[in-house]
Length: 487
Image (cartoon, rainbow, N blue to C red; front, top):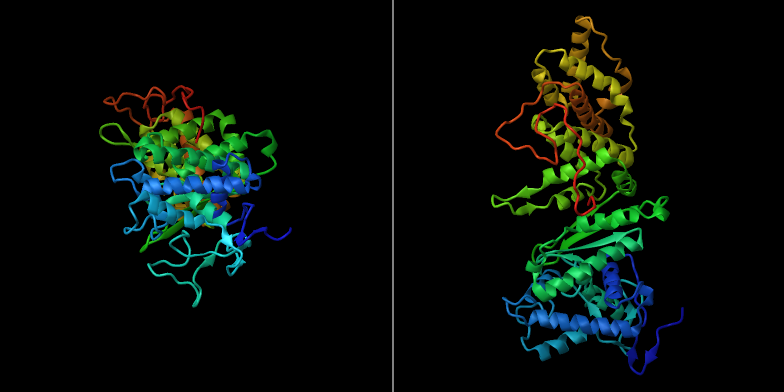
């Protein structure tokens, strides 16, 4: 590729680079979206000029707005990301004309006579040095910068400077943080940025209060992954996504990184094709919704269940299985159809996300259910199993006692020797199997009409979820999902 073009004393950057740095990459997609282009390599020098002019207008408008003006909410966003920049500093000029000149200099074309160095993002020659006040998550964890001795800043070319300040448009922003997405697939990245650019426009015009149907970054990502999973051509191409959530203030900046696994595409593709598992997803979503006393939603089930598919980087936690297993303390107040739906959801997750076949659990399921239902009042034995379900040694003892009791009573206990090894292992596989076993046992108790749960006559049954009859049989009614989605 030929060197950069020169015009008199100015060094023009006509191409927007697309790098692997999360902040620059999200900003490059935001520039592309704001310019009305499909891909970053389609952005022209004129597009860069137009986007830079828009950023300047929006920054100045937000920075000169009064605190009761909706545009002031966009200033809060900028303050969380660029706390010591000219337009966010407490001592910033309040005159729009003066501040416009200051901000325009952020994106000035480099001069060919400047000392030129490779851009820290893309490697293009740059004559401008930027530091923490202009670059989120660069340099330091405290007020003072920690650049190497004698270095005034990081070299950043004009195109990347525009991308960095366009980043908030394409990020999922709050008044105190921002989240950007990186993914193996460009379409998912672009969908995420496009959604957030529309959201940013609403914030700038009407403030955060205009976001009545706000969605968490995980939910937006899952929507994009769901769309990707439904494409016929994506079947052989699993992808992973990473969310970079950060705050860049003066004293306590932080960064949290979470990611989906490659297998999430298989899971999202399979989920709507298996009605029981799909029903389990929807009912868990409802169960995770939290409402205040006046009925307003204080925690969205959409957002809460979406987060269960995101793990801290390098730490697989199976948060969806944890949420399901934690429901064991209230199963007697849960309808039979919901319990069976959660069994199906857990089994689907293990199959698609972990590559595990839960069919081997059938003998131990039969053993436990035979032992529980052998009692005239099986509630006590069920509670004994529930307490042991998540504890390896306690479960081992219970299985031994159940086998012995059935044998002494003249019954033939199931042969479980083929599954006890992996089931009782102190590994993630063992924990997953023990969690699935609980729902297998519960589902079988439902099928046998075991008298475990009790109906609370003071409560009205949830028509969508079946009557609250504990483990009694009830009809499987399809959920009425007005949004037609599952994220």
